Length: 303
Image 1: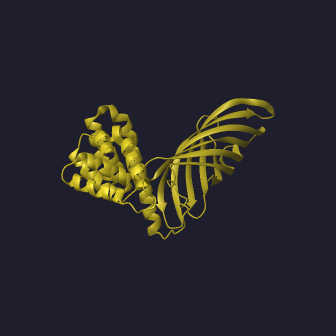
Image 2: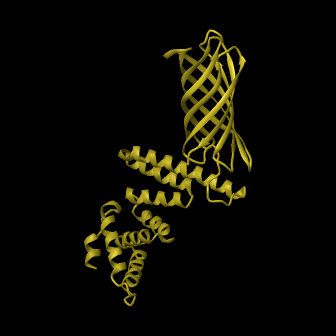
């Protein structure tokens, strides 16, 4: 009782550590279970909270948070209703809504805190993005369940992970003009953009064939991909973007020429394996001969 009195009406932030230590100490006070110390204390806190004691409400929140009880959300919401200016408590309520997949309610609570406390605007912006990320993951999990995916590993698709890393290997042929890519190897990083899109950055080496012979090039490309078709077994995405190259001069050492190309990509993502199969149409934007090439790419995601 002395410890509870000392904690008093501290806010969720200021008193959180003390309350957590208190409920942990009470829970460990009698490992044999013969003393009902914590059980009796919880009953007194519930009674006091129901009759307007906010300190008891804070202690109940600490207890349920410590043991991850299913009653935590109910107590949090009721306490926040009585102390609507406690931002830390409001953040806990919003997180609880998000865990329960009530993403719209979580967004509303975050926006209330941002309006009430402008100094938290940057933090709230980050938390709102987390809500959207959680919403995307929940939608993907629901899709997996509806489509009969019972394995624990997530299906391979455009947005199953926020960030992907992998390798791409491709072979190509001329469509128009020369300087087609005979072979390329690149590393890629793909970042989710929205619920059905991704931005893929590629960096690697390419071996090209020209009238003067073969030459190597260093390439850096960016592609925005958008899901166009989704089935139980695979997904198809369509994308486009620029590609920059630093090219060699035949047998001469070093890179002496630059070029800018435009890409259009169709990518197939099988759901059973972390791999991709793509067809990329590449058109030169800066070469004297506006050549075009068609490349077939095989990608493997590193997990």
